[in-house]
Image (cartoon, rainbow, N blue to C red; front, top):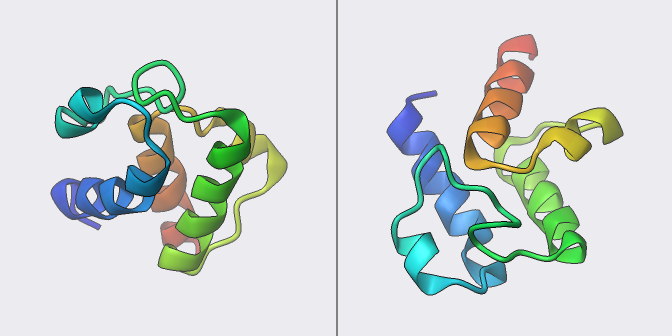
Length: 84
């Protein structure tokens, strides 16, 4: 999947959970979900579930623990999609 398309989809997934509008508007692959967007850990689980639904993939606990930034989410999604 193209990088820009993936970032756009991730952006729409995390939008309901963000606490920092300015960081959201500047979202890039370097954005950290917790530090930059101020998404709490409970909502981060919701983000992971939404990512699973959006891309029809399963994210295991190890990957879930690594999915703390946009880049990590992109890497995990692309790896899961490639393995399908």
